[in-house]
Length: 303
Ligand code: HMG
Ligand code: MG
Image 1 (cartoon, helix red, strand yellow):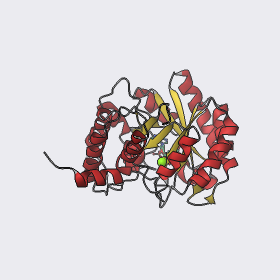
Image 2 (tube, rainbow, N blue to C red):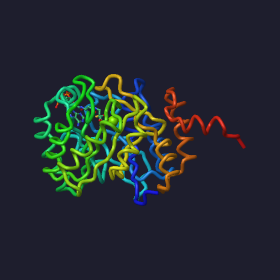
Image 3 (cartoon, rainbow, N blue to C red):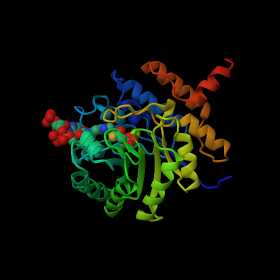
Image 4 (cartoon, helix red, strand yellow):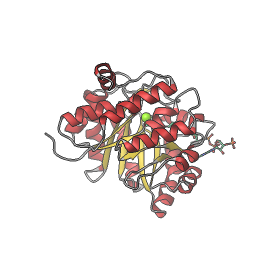
């Protein structure tokens, strides 16, 4: 077995819900986060302090953060695009924020309305102010394999963004296969190029959408390349309003099932996750993307 620790970053309440067409109430969002806390997840991305004009579903993230019951051992980050978002994160008393940039020029324009170069200028003061305030910063790089507008993205474009972020002092980079087109054949060279650009001290995380059903294979390939942090979403919820055709994130249940069986320990309760995924899919009227959940529910005998 591979011996060291894995950290799962549950992105269901943010990535999972941001693209849902019907508004999800604050009460449901709070219940989702609280139940994920109870299931033992160590990091739960619980909202986004972005423009409500751009992503209406994330409006009211301040109310979500005010409503959840925080476990002091759990980190509850939120997406932050600019200084205004950072101020909201500070009011919500967050320990960590997540900034987000892209390796694709067109996706950058569509998602955050600026070029990659401009996005460095925009996030630099956010990172500096967060560090000054003792808030940790995680950074996403989107479109590390493919872009919905430009097609294949060269690994050196990903490495260039990674180097810029590390130069600003970021120590954890989440590599987003935003549209889920990657396979071990493309993920491995991308990881190798980024790793050689940023060095061994930087934590790299895999953020793999499962559009083409490759996410678990990509996690396995990443594990073999030393990655130990993975983002996932209960029931495989997820997608991005500015990435047409993107499927959900890899389902947390499926990641826990696979990695537990490989001998990794998480302290995450799979049975509780299955129930949470089943519940949220019924509440928001969405099909459950977790094959593990479908299999377990099909064979479960009710007491
Ligand atoms: P903009 O229109 O260029 O900027 O948007 P602006 O400064 O002109 O602001 C527009 C309006 O939003 C203004 O309101 C601002 O006040 C307001 P108005 O004056 O018109 O009434 N505004 C805000 N409101 C609340 N909180 C804020 C904020 N900032 C401005 N922080 C901006 C630029 C970056 C704000 C916008 O493009 C935006 O919010 N984009 C977010 C898009 C997004 O959230 N996408 C999904 C998340 S990324 C993702 O899913 C990928 C990921 O999962 C990894 C992967 O899979 O690859 C992370
Ligand atoms: Mg995503």
